Length: 197
Picture 1 (cartoon, rainbow, N blue to C red):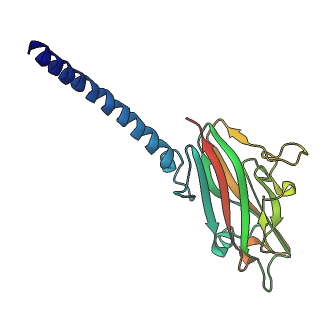
Picture 2 (picture 1 turned 180 degrees about the horizontal axis):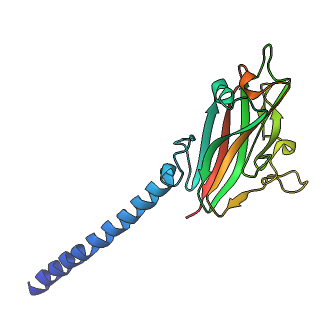
Picture 3 (picture 1 turned 90 degrees about the vertical axis):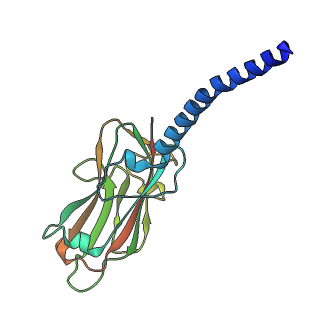
């Protein structure tokens, strides 16, 4: 009988010791889940729209511009729109610019290009300059990939590790008229980043 009560006592002791360890492990798991599924914790508010569809440490960012965003750049032929500020230890994997509505109409610039990057003055690091006077996708062909994401002349994409807080911009360049004369130009930017712990 003593042996029976001794075994019960030992089982009870093990249960008491196991509960805090399990609770601690659960708390840690919850912490990492929150860290990687809520990228807004590590990206600045900016004007970027964070998407919910992400994998562990991997995030797709999306920004859509309207014609009014370009017109607001004023009587300039070259100007930039800030997309976001990437945090330190962030890897940019891929980037795309999708022109969904081309610039058209009377009195508009004769040429209008858009590029995306982090380095002044031309911002070509992530997507090379493409025409915003045509509905098209840029960044999905090797020739359109930005300088920071291309692997020399090889037919492959590279990655860009930023080690400090890094602003990313869209740059619009017009000729024949200023940016405030642009009509009907709209589009969307997609960027895949991985945030390291």
